[in-house]
Length: 322
Image 1 (cartoon, one colour):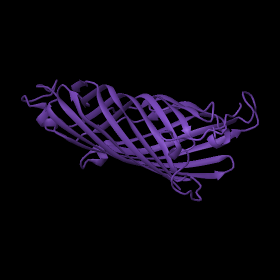
Image 2 (cartoon, helix red, strand yellow):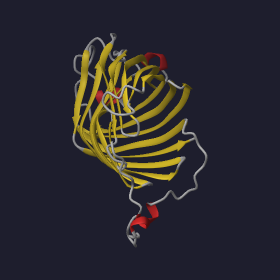
Image 3 (cartoon, one colour):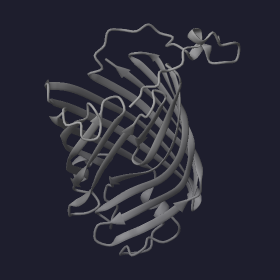
């Protein structure tokens, strides 16, 4: 596949004038000798005053992602990934309505019973890729095939009940790569969902396609993200995807086995600015075009369910590469 190099204004004789992207052509900070074996990403998502029911919901979610990659052998790569997140939900007005579904006992106000939510999430994963061959050339010259797998454990809980939200899972699949252009992974995933006592089996699908040096298309949650490099240091993105966050809640008498789920469909745009080879800044904003909040009891089923109106959000991410 032919490579399309990034344009160099100085080589074409067309300089950047006032109001163009001259200050974004190169990273503003000096580069450092790095291996990119360790990546640390700090981010915060803010979704304020989203209309739900007859009230509003504000979500603030700071998180930390750490990823360490180790080439154990020429044909084996291992990776350790850690994610920590705090999800703070503030509810205003009558979000949940006046009844608590099929809950037993005397009638209570759902908004008073549920209250604001301070939710926590931790996940540690071990991932690996074992290269099967790099000399088949069935579909493209230089292609590589690999077996990929992962195991993870973690918890999604409220306040102090860490063990109540424990979850585990894993995935196994086949990976295909054309270096610098295409990376695809297909397989199956198995997990223990915290809102269900059984096991959940699902597909594993991952894509990163880079047909030119400027354009990249990749999967993101249940959706896609497209990226375009305006300069070697600055790029823009658009995305459309669905995300789902589920946490185990503390017991609220007479209810004991409760889970809270926030499912969102987002449309987004943003930019990625390479401040140095070791520092990247990403800013994203957009709309939550569809949102569904749910409170579920393991024995009684869904107790509360609300769909939100479209609302805005923004997210900032800072990534260090070492």
